[in-house]
Amino acid sequence: MIAAEMVRRGAERYAARTAVVFGDERMSFSEVDDAANRFANALMARGLSKGDQVALLVNNGPWSVSLDFACLKAGFVRVPLNARLSVLEHERMLRETEARWLVYGSALAEVASSLCERVPGLVGIGIGNADVGGGDLLADAATADDRDPGVELSADDPMLVLYTSGTTGTLKAAVHTQGSYAAIATNILANLVSPQRDSVMLHAASLIHASGTFVLPYWLAGATTAILERFEPTEFVAAIARYRATEVNLVPTMLAMLFASGAAEHADVSSLRTVIYGASPMPRPVLERAIDAWGPIFTQYYGQTEAPLCITVLDRADHLDASLRGSCGFPSVDAEVRLVTEDGGLAGVGEIGEVQVRAPFVMAGYYRADELNAEMMTDGWLRTRDMARRDERGYLYLVDRRSDMIVTGGYNVYPREVEDALMEHPAVAECAVVAAPDPTWVEAVVAFVVFKPDGAASEEELRAFVRDRLAGYKVPQRVTVLEQIPKSAVGKVLRRALRDPLWGDGRG
Image (cartoon, rainbow, N blue to C red; front, side):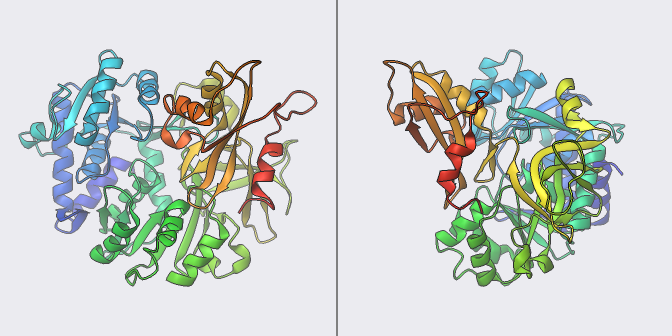
């Protein structure tokens, strides 16, 4: 079954049940589906057709699910734009994907206007906003046909182009199809969570990220998706009680913030059945404090944009075994997982190798990147560039990232893009960027620089320089000036020589 058909199946079966909650607004399955049909038909009336790339610059809101389902049904290819990225990063994504349409939320109208000025031919369509000049999709939908658009679709049709820097170091777009997105939904249901009709999943993270992959599984089960506009600790725990949430999905930073702020200590979490976490390493002290406070209701997944959501899972029962709490889990039932050593052999028990996965939920490939696809995918096996070891029971333990990626607050930062920005500064001769431990964000971006002869700049000047070029979470929290960057005999930067002293006895 393809993803669009899953939407139809849920709408038909659970028509009158509550599907989406946002604030005081409640929408039934049939209302969400009708809105999706209206959005799809309104966009098609503007000239969009199957296969067209539609960029989405939207925050969480009442129309998030209907807009995504509209794109699925019409066969549009969604290009989500993370609102935290810079205008320059968005512009690059729009140009590379050749998206001609930008659907934006009212709060992001100013950014949308800037993008429409910078990208020739781009048309901005607002949701409850017409400031950019392309009209208001809500107004169009009010008079649009509410019947299914009836576009003929197949499993191989692309439906999502999602940018990531997780495995390659530069922004690349993973392409998912109607078939692979349907497989993501069944992967979640088979491995991670089994929603009942009374289940409510509370979403505070952006629905364009991993959080959004839970919507379709809950839709198929007749369960409810409760959406918050943003994450704020006090508001989040209040929403758990208000909506009687049974499941939540958190990145480790969110969990750390809940307890650091004190919001979690006396929260009413009696409705919670499962707390799902992933996207970055979980600090052991944070996890154990959470288990002590909320009980053994935690489940971890390990995956990546190229293979969401569950390559491995550490379920609730696994968390009862303290010796497993440093593991990223056991391979999912619908995934083949292997560890490959530097010489191309299979790693034995306790031996480190690169995690590679073959599964129906793996992406179709990177967008217009034949060389990269040839490098990263072989006979259906995806190279994750994550290094891990396997214990005698078959559980995996991540030990390093071959890509040196930094995960800060659940967001991926690749050192090279920060280094490239720093190297544009006229005073910088060399630089290296690594991760440092951070009690709130798990990992922090830190930079080391060597100035050119007679060159100089303050730390704040360098941080501001990067901030003008990259998203805020990619800006180094600290910049240290060195006389030289440590290198190997062949001139390769020794990141570990910079990183290891920051971590002391190691990560996690």
